[in-house]
Length: 106
Image (cartoon, rainbow, N blue to C red; front, side, top):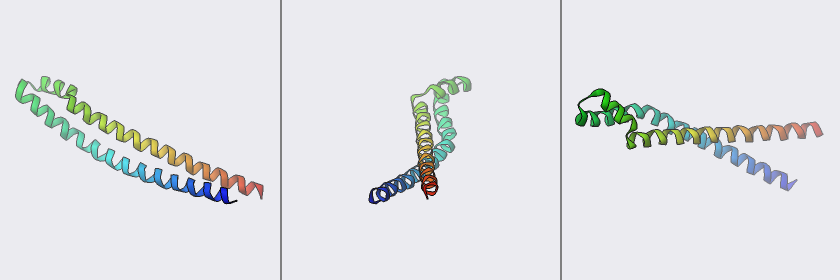
């Protein structure tokens, strides 16, 4: 019984950790998503000053290493948020399954 309580405590701690990570990562990803157009326009403005064509500036901005890094940062943070949410939900389902098994045994 002591082992079961310890395992349950570990499971509860993982659930709390994954819930917190999911929430924080989702918030950061949301901020990055809102910031991406601003970053893109700054990079596009920089290219426009050198190329004097809006179309060229936009194409160069889309392939600019800084913009690509910003997009990768957003993708990684979104992935972290999704992964933490999946792990959170999986551990919650495990707790529910254990509770169901324990209830069935009684």
